[in-house]
Image (cartoon, rainbow, N blue to C red; front, side, top):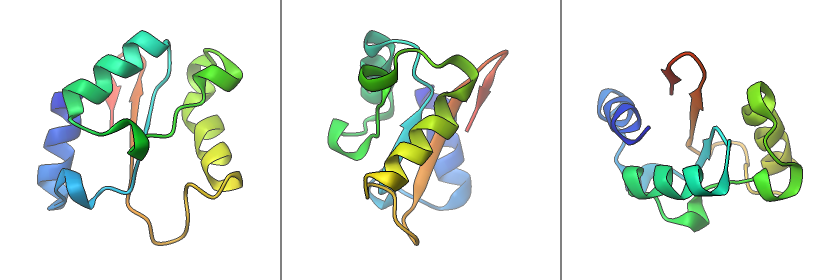
Length: 91
């Protein structure tokens, strides 16, 4: 997932430091650790919910976004990157 995220950031004109929050697809804690490493994003700027809700498959991003908003981690005006997996990668 790291390379697609980097391409989207480049196209948007954002640097990694501009991103306030990253919400990745969450299939396992191990996979998320690898995604964060590949993207070069510190854990504290990532909203993970797999430890709360488990693998929520296709609903990962909406569940994580709702949780981020509910807990105050995602606020209006913040720059947020979503990275999802399925039959491919969407960012």
